[in-house]
Length: 113
Length: 116
Image 1 (cartoon, helix red, strand yellow):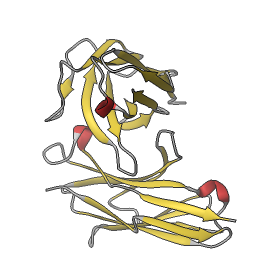
Image 2 (tube, rainbow over the protein chains, first blue to last red; image 1 turned 180 degrees about the vertical axis):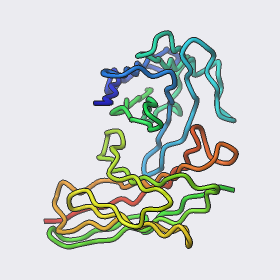
Image 3 (cartoon, rainbow over the protein chains, first blue to last red; image 1 turned 45 degrees about the vertical axis):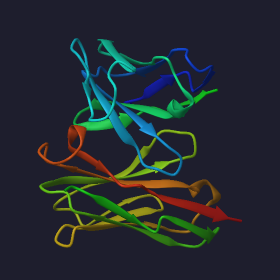
């Protein structure tokens, strides 16, 4: 139980385009999901907290207009990287909270050319 | 400031050998501590969770210890296998007043390589 999926697992896009990443809780409902970014050999850095039916809460330094988060249902949160640039290339991981614990997705590798 | 420090940063050992990874934290108040295994290009997977009153917890060949007084934890891997090659991340949950979202503070991880 408590499985979280992400789609796509990897994506390559051109600079200036937008990319949407999906995070789904497959066998449970999650009112709260989290989005992290991870650079090589670094730990996970929290970007934002996604709350179902309300606006996301962004961490300091994270541009909310660049990283759009939508949590329209209890099993799906999406992260859209708008006008992506090479510096946005990273590993994006989501997690969903259940029973006081966070369950992590497998991650999405974004490469912006 | 809540912090989680892990050592060593990286470690290379031969298959079949044992190893111990360290985690020191300053998170307060303390709720629980988890060790995660993260394979390259994958999300973290929980290995163990320990609360204040627990000193030792095992999960197969993984054994975690916790000393809440000194705010130290260790993860011992016995008879290492090639599949143990991964990053091991220590995550401490504290009070909402000091930790990150959901009260979590992440360590930077120990990158473990098992050589045949």
